[in-house]
Length: 439
Image (tube, rainbow, N blue to C red; front, side):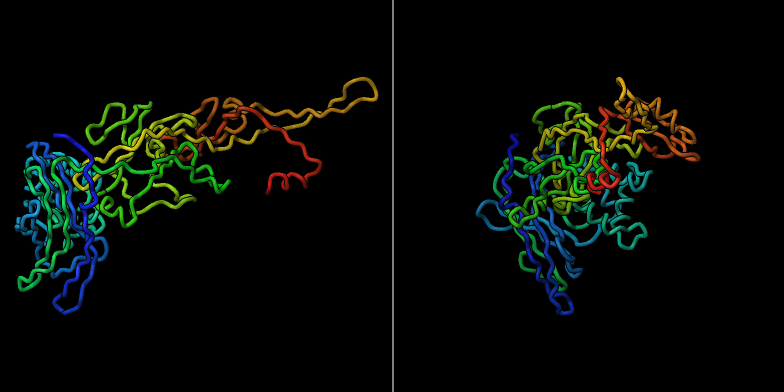
């Protein structure tokens, strides 16, 4: 079946829920209601993943059920599903993940829960998932519950926030949702969307993917860029782009050591790519235009968590994709060529001393010769190694820790010895030095 970019202009309708609660007070909250096409990996048929949830506030608890309606073309609406506004049991959650086509969703949710509960496996993941989403359980986490509903369509189904319309024939369909209040009172429509099921929904590629420096505004903090690559891109936050944003759970970034050209990560992840983020990157809005927070993601090759880190000056290529609510990738942004920054100043030269010389015939012309040790690891260790445990030594860098800390259990301090040339300045007075350096 062909895969084209699905037009999203009519996919989402942002609705304002106006529902009278039992006490007669109007409860007004904003919610999203929309859907996307997802090809079932087991059956090969097209499924429509219908999702809804809160954008602001909370859906009133008086809504006991949701009714889902569907119409084909210009036909009439038919009720196709009633969804309880409550959390399913662990056994019911397990059933969702055991359905044909949900194998990838199951593997991903086990991996995600393993970061919270290390003993998560095929026989208990549904219990842990239920506990995190159950407000009456000690392990309940409201923020995790919200993230899970957008990360996994089955977690959303377990919360009464999604429905999968299976095996849909190619065509144009309109979906509508209503709520059921006490006394079996049905609300007015809370949302509608239209979708064409000819092909899978593929979100557009993220815009303005770029490498950024975050320490430019401060000489003191410029080292935050050293051996780290910071990234920024545009998050769709304007009202006209809400249809796209509401279908995005987060973002993943992949790194390559060479330019692999234009890629389509929606179809497959080729060899030679490594995902730099362990968990999907969640971005609620755009980053500031400048300052230490002016980025959405960074890559330091796990320098602080046991990785090898980066060598300044090395070049890598990056690809960025958005992850939709069905667990599929968008079109791919990249390749972005990024160079590992070198912003750390080299060590201050040591053992600097002057030697007066007189040359030529009388009267002699005085000359001052400045001498210092060449900056390299051998001379540095001779001068400064006392009282330090050396973790790594090379002509361009020495890394060490201060006992009783050890290199195996403590992040070392690294000194930059990569000196290309020396600059010597002369001042007529001590007063001129700080003025010249702008201090």
